[in-house]
Length: 299
Ligand SMILES: C[S@@+](CC[C@H](N)C(=O)[O-])C[C@H]1O[C@@H](n2cnc3c(N)ncnc32)[C@H](O)[C@@H]1O
Image 1 (cartoon, rainbow, N blue to C red):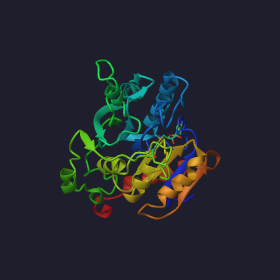
Image 2 (cartoon, rainbow, N blue to C red; image 1 turned 120 degrees about the horizontal axis):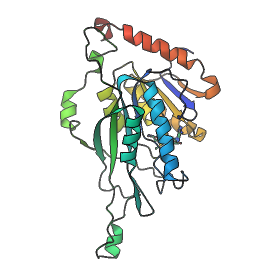
Image 3 (spheres, rainbow, N blue to C red; image 1 turned 90 degrees about the horizontal axis):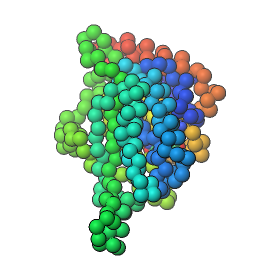
Image 4 (cartoon, rainbow, N blue to C red; image 1 turned 30 degrees about the vertical axis):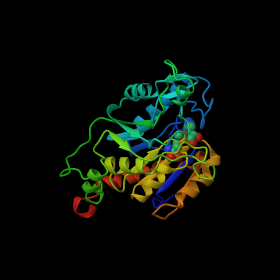
């Protein structure tokens, strides 16, 4: 397997990512399945504890593969199922801390008011305009940012990657208010006919900001829960390698169709686990090469 391949998808369970060496990933951008979300994932998990067990195992694997100093972002939110709210944000934060991560920050992603597909709950009050009927319409999710130790900013001694080419456009940063702890971004409504139908996909703008803010060109971004492949597509457009895991093989044509709309061309590599044995070697070499990039040559 050569390292020309910029996008790799492994069909398998991300609780075990043994294809990835320790410390080989520079950024994780993902959204785990939403705990029994009424429309997309009803009754996916038998119990909330089953859901937490999955997240606990994935957190440990993510910690192992992420390079020291680097970041893992989980997009998720508390989930209201049959009138009971499950504290997903608090629990995922705790699990990531237990895995070893530092809880670095949280950004609230606010969707437009029109997002009423799974959240038109205030309507109950309109039918019964009396106290005790109120549930708010939910138009937010949380972007949880975790870090493995601290980043080494000493670019004189150690130039890991293409720093200058990864410069962030400060004009855009200010104009679009990336500086705030609230990001207003239009969500993807999984309407019939859209490629994201039946998948709780996040909009491209979300990984776009996270990848620009927390990785350099030439680095490797991991999404352990690929879905339609949004993180992989955006990583590719931004000159990053990307690797993803997905258990649902039926998503392959959806991933292909999404990735065909990407800016950069090149192979998309789909692997069954048994065929992905060489990946460890490829990744180890990639990490070694990144360390030797010099400042002048990195552009
Ligand atoms: C919320 S979706 C991800 C959506 C994605 N961010 C996008 O923009 O399309 C979660 C995905 O995780 C997959 N999944 C669930 N459990 C998994 C596991 N243990 N290993 C790998 N993938 C898993 C589901 O099949 C689903 O496609």
